[in-house]
Image 1 (spheres, helix red, strand yellow):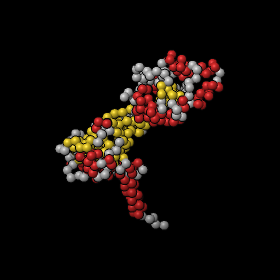
Image 2 (cartoon, rainbow, N blue to C red):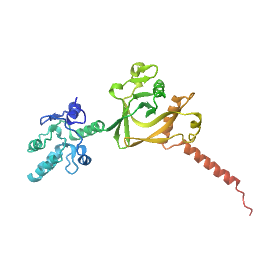
Image 3 (cartoon, one colour):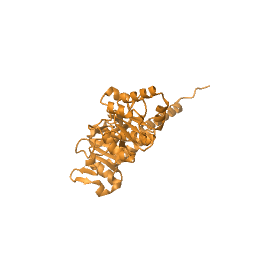
Image 4 (tube, rainbow, N blue to C red):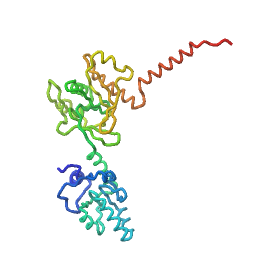
Length: 324
């Protein structure tokens, strides 16, 4: 199957759902959906209705655009069509099985621009293409760790090899949480401040636990123990600490920080790993605490405020009343 970042791959994946068909011959070489010219690509959105000022890589023409072209003078209509193809779109798609107006096939052949047709309405074509391309062309990276759904939050366990990430993940699954990916979760930036993690197809369902080998979580715990994808909301960095290092941690705010992935800042907490600590309970608590932070509540700030109010009240009580 062609890669999804090409026009041929797009038609292969969405063709049956949108009824896409080629009006011109299928290009011999893969046609990239992203422009190779970085300056041109920055000015182009991926898909949209007819736009000659900020041209789209995939231009969709519906009845409104065709009627608009028909209402123009011949010279004005010809100018818009020439500007449309001069922008070098990846393709021009005609909605509702519209027959291309005269001149389109000639300009398409001259510029090497494919023409496609769909029986769907223009709005549906644009919506489905935008949704599909958001995921298909998202910037991606692969991280080392275990990705879980804990209480509806996407949590990435990170740490040195052998520190116990997979063992903790297994205990979380036993407690009713869900595994998304072990060892090599794939993270994609699907929005300006949104990262989404998923599992590569090859590793789906599997969890490696030292001493037990590779486990099939679906076969052992059922469909409910797995999830396909989730937004990345929290990173939990598992680290070994000796007694002195553990004592030096901030006792009010813990180790809250951020880590930047694909240009997006993700909250990160450090989970000390030491004998006798119930890591599953601590992980659940860290997630609940992050949920409270997202709702605007911080227990450390609350305690500091309460102490400040108490000090002020005691100071007022100890201030002597002046004699009149």
